[in-house]
Amino acid sequence: MKNNKLVKYVIDSYQELKKVTWPTRKQLIRDTTIVVVSSAVATAILALIDLGLTNALQYFVSLKG
Image (cartoon, rainbow, N blue to C red):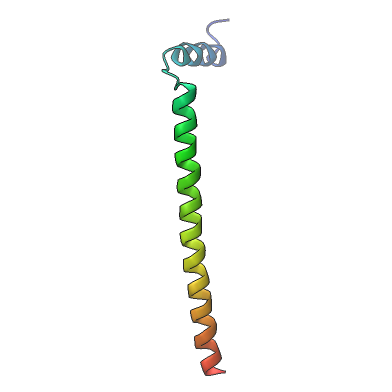
């Protein structure tokens, strides 16, 4: 049964996972907080840019019409 590619893949994957250095709870919380805050800041910046460009486009369209 060890000749089966799927079985070999699962066994090899399990062995590789045993080598992983998993983060501590403190590291995980810190890194997750960084990602969430960074995502929120990037979203806010992009929303402001979108709002500004939308208003600018509406202004230029109203000048023509």
